[in-house]
Image 1 (cartoon, rainbow, N blue to C red):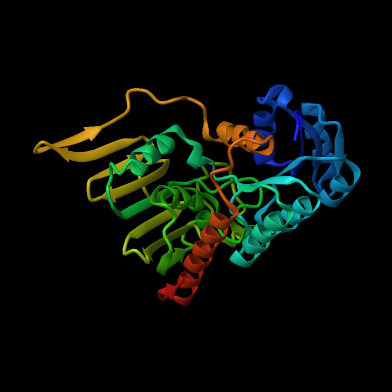
Image 2: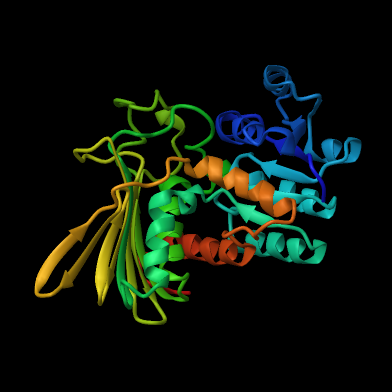
Length: 347
């Protein structure tokens, strides 16, 4: 495939406008954003005019039929990830789909199978993997500096961070609340650093205590009368290798900090936190805390798009794979199922 990479974008909402379009544009002459599709055609036309995108369509199917594309970014609500991704793959396009992969693991598996049949790239918008803190810690882990990682913790908690825009509080369109929206980022980051171990048993609980009543919104006012997702989820995963992960995520909770996004790992040689990165170890009868003096400044979103473009043009394969997307979705499903049943479930 030769430059420029011809890209189409499905969905003209916040993630397309704030992440995908500007970061494709940063790729310069290597990328041409050819088309934008959204069922809200007027909004799509406005966004396209702002960014000089030549073609606008009301559906992904029409876009794929009318213009020649090499790659597609899927920036729709979660419910439509599977249909847009399958259509793009079947049309011979590489796909970068926003997280989570889908609404259930069966959909994620359909997407993975379609990518394999088409011989095309399918990767997901799990941009925290691309943060310099994560990349640096991964090098330490791969070198064996942490030893056996047997315990981890993933936290994605906001004090009053229920999104006041979009469909984030609509279970039918999103599949859930903070667990599937922000918790998925820290869960995936922890799994990635741990080497994506195979899960054994999951135990979880979800709560709806704040989102379904009127209150202070630090991310805008939300429609509390139509709030149909959890506002907090907590869980524990035991893996087949004996390691464990504790997960806590919330759109709204009575805590001090406005937002905490954190992954902690504990190995038998050393431990670490990311965001910010700090490594804890024992050497020469001394307990040491190590922090980097310098890390690259490129953001995770920018690197995610840049590397997707590189992969489409024949470079290194994406670090987020369709198979990991299925595994991640299975864990999300298991966490929600355990919470619904009120008991542990096997994976």
